[in-house]
Length: 342
Image (cartoon, rainbow, N blue to C red):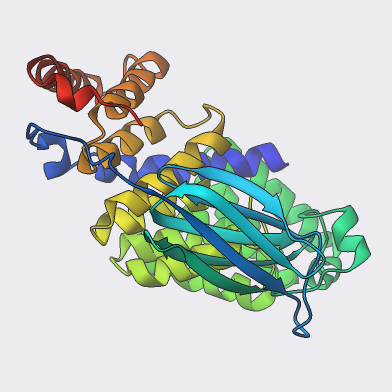
């Protein structure tokens, strides 16, 4: 069942892919000179607190940035530190079971300090089965509604959208606040270009089950499609608390930051998405490459474009990608200084 939903999310992302690669980013100019790799090392330190304000020991803290991805654990006083990291923007995330918190921090030459407060329960049961807990709302779903939803998933996996929507309506008729069914309908509507309907349904799903990560992801994608990028960032980060290892929210966050002209932040998010996607969504390579071009990292942009061509050589966008790769290679040959790697 999970594999069907993964397919639907791939379909959702693919429906927006052509928009990601359109526009002036394909015509990126290639000025000579350095590629902005002269970042100096700095440090990031902080403390993680529980909901009651007490220090949280043995908590996993992860940083994800353009030039560094790393993780550590807090000490008995809830403190942590990352030393000798390049200056830049980092996503800092602390997690324990279903409890988590996430902040975006700018680390300059003087270093940075941050206080993180865990949001959500951190019971022993949650720690034993992180990301796999069943919400109370899910347990309320009657068998009749669940069976209709399973049929809807099956039909959606076959791309029989009309039949899928029919079964979703029957599932919702049996249980109106069925978050999974509402989320599936949101995915289908988004894929059909009905972004407002998709947003409304995702919000209703979240109202029914506030721990439904996929509903946050679809809502974030809908906000991006409507140009509400700040709302998308907030929403996607909320969903990541419940499913931190899904690649889709980081992909959407990258798109959000690109739209806000924050290319370095976009690169960090796409980098995380590529790590988690495990080659399941080749267009991600091309989208990542367009962001790398904007930060003048031409060597890695070329590498990502080549991964895209290797994965989907017959893509309708293959010729465009080959043209850009040729431009990059010509410029790298003319300007050896552009080949500097971090």
